[in-house]
Length: 455
RNA sequence: GUCGCUAUCGUCCAGAGGCCUAGGACGACAGAUUCUCAUUCUGUAAACACGGGUUCGAAUCCCGUUAGCGACACCA
Image (cartoon, rainbow, N blue to C red; front, side, top):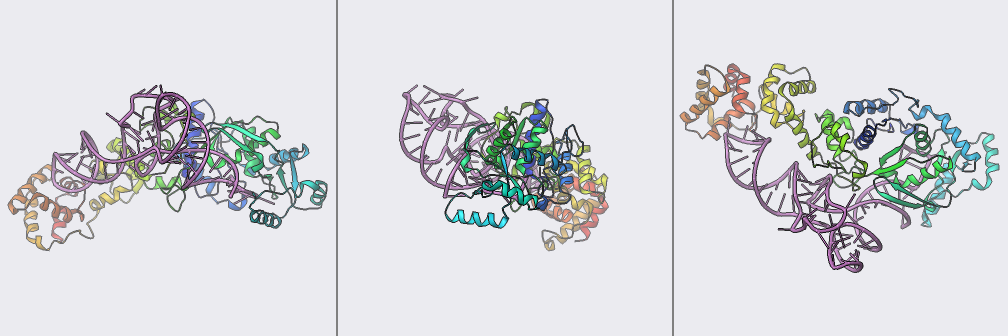
């Protein structure tokens, strides 16, 4: 990943998950390398956050800037000498060349090309006068190193899309080494993938058009290219590339809403892939066992949070009370009474889709409602009666409350639905709430009477 | 504009020439249970983009059209 955002992008998590699964399945290593070659787009703290999020999600790296490894350093900004060495080697072998064109000249050139409806491409202005260019560089001119694209057809077999062919005439003489001494993505990724012995490059489809350049680079360096596979990009509901305007894109935003890491991975696994037995819910271990690159779908999936939330609800219902209580406590923090949380879990387990639903459902168990969804004026006398009934309940349990309230409704001549509705609102403030009798039991007799008296 | 990728219910997927009167899941709708909501259960609606081929036979193979997306930076 590239630390140009405040956290890891959900699409990167999806791709990372496939890479992780493929590596684990085949006894390989999963490596995280930070591609921080664009100084201007660096987001402070972004790298640390994306690394910790990946960790939290359970995508654990065998080698990374944090844990190290045999091919360290794993941060491209710390490998500048390596890239420069290979770039110069390329120049010496006639596979690349120096260029001192200014950004101004380049943009003028492109403008002119566009006006003539030509493909914008570098015109090799500097290639024809390399001696002159080298002299200028010696005198301190800023320069870049460009790949000399040969005239050829590039054919390769993409692991997920099959045979893909490009003609090099559509390719630009790609800058490999920037004037600030940093490599571009293209140089960095090829050099490091080779040096770090990467066997499979599974990445987003936005890289498909650059792959021919990478293959040319591998050949120019005399190296064997790895296997490439390009997976489809996650989409917004309108099919455009998943963007933060239309969806939360940072992985931690989902966790912060109370979506479990396991849910997120499980759901992401289903983007462009399906379990051979048609299962929807499965563990990471099982995914690793049955995953295969050849089963990846080529169509671009819409990231639909509705199904994600359904799935999270399924996970919630799988937890026992103790586990779910712990997760709720961790999520909402210390300001809530733990014993009440524990008692309330059975009432809300089937009603929650994500942890952030808990306070919405249960706030009335911790404090008196601040407003009521219906007007009680015509029920004043009814509440007097209800209070008397409650007062006379000896064992204040859900069951006893149910019996007593049933009797009370009968005495008042009210329909159960109407009776329980006004009681529900008086207790919880809302027309929709967890089961009423059980909620009243948790609140206790005194608190119930207090609430009924207050209206 | 050029190059490339893609095209099955609203959404996620199954389907790798006859097993397809196209299957599952989410969502929607209806019903059952119920003091609300939810859970659970039952049922319903809902798709092979279009046009040509190939073949005895096409959702599946080929070509074209259309549409969507991506790439064309000293960004990744």
